Image 1 (tube, rainbow, N blue to C red):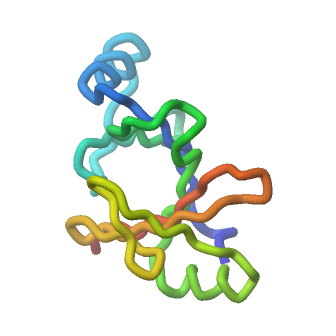
Image 2: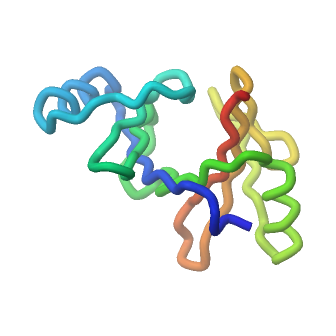
Image 3: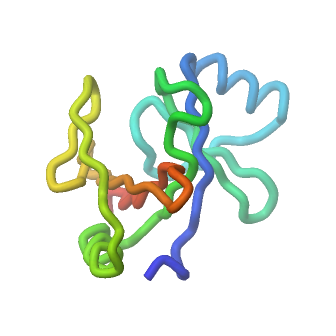
Length: 127
């Protein structure tokens, strides 16, 4: 199922411009040129490590901890549901899921909690 997928740690930022200045100017990281949700940035750290910083009012620890980049969201969700994973439903300003799936400009995502209550996501980028 997910063993062949890339995983990206995710960090919420209340001020995405301030966060960008920190990661780019203070840490010297570069943005990765790849599709990503509006109001977010993916940064490269080292040869293969990447992480997503996204605009969110959530406090650190209350937001998505990491996401798995998948090729086919529907296939992965079915496999995980077959293994007993329940997907979250959200209805709030800027985020509404249908059957566990959020869609924005071709990007699709679904969230679930691990055994410890951490929120993880499956994300399919526009092709």
